[in-house]
Image 1 (tube, one colour):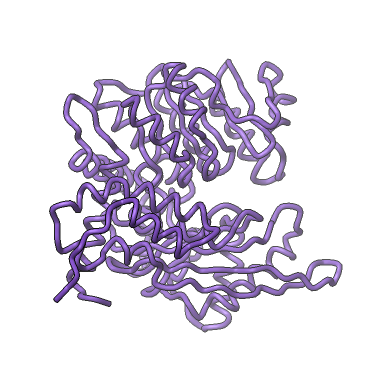
Image 2 (tube, helix red, strand yellow):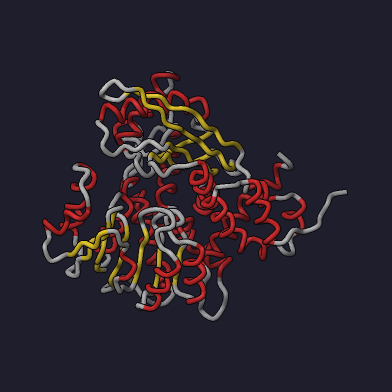
Length: 451
């Protein structure tokens, strides 16, 4: 006879912590989901008896490997690489590759866990995975980056495939790095197949993939504001980050009539009271992407702006906020400051940028708050569309893709409302996203039996 005694939330989380010692990011990600899922599962015996959440919180596999490469001075360098394949109940593993000194197994496990629910929310057939290395591309020559990418793929290639696991880019991995890795995969396997997304347009990439995450976060923000009869026209926005997601989120806000006040990087943030318009956004894109410069140099080009070293932008009064940099950049005290200053809505462009105290603060204040697994799903959604285009050996027009992206973000918003409507005009988007994503994955797992 099956054991059906139900462990409570605290007991479940104690088990997660015991099984994953020294992995705080992963434990935090599981906690944030479990807080909502336990209530949803209360009267659903099949989820309990089949240990569905327990199984989702245990990756299918974690592959760890050594990456050796030679720098320009002839020195042998050694990094560590990983691929976390969390869950493929609804499709091939799908998730980015991150190159950054902060990459650890805990960080990648949290990202792969989040990716499982995010991908489910898109409605596309994609499971959740994530990979990367503690390699730091900053300060490296192009040839050093190429050699590292080739060495990384020489190990990774045996674990991925168009119908197995399809990585993409992430922090530290853009079109250049994807190109180097794809070239090495093709060289080793003699296969030209859609094994990576974020590829160049000339060799299987998709239009609007670069813009998709930032644009999608703003489309989701628009959908949330529309529930209150509002839009972005005339609203002030505070944005963190200055990379791909942040600059395209800023671009879309400007297009929709909003005023962007801040951008940031690891050194601090810039505040431009006149607004960061399209000309200034283009300057940041060129400066950060092509010249690998620092955001503090913005004030030299635009002297009315100020730079605040070592600080985050959450103290600047605003109508809407978009954390688009990295995990746990917006803390509980920051959330209280935003709410006290009148912030009406928060749409996460990064993955888990708000810590648990911040999440609880936003929920208690009942502001419009979209978790990353919902609001930043635009990037992986267009990656999924790139996979479809590769399978069909075709490319869709930009207008078609823009409409598909809008439709997917609207569909995610509707799913969040379905499971997150608390009555009285308040929608708990965190709860809605967690339950909608969990239910789709869980029901597929039930159909497969114990595997």
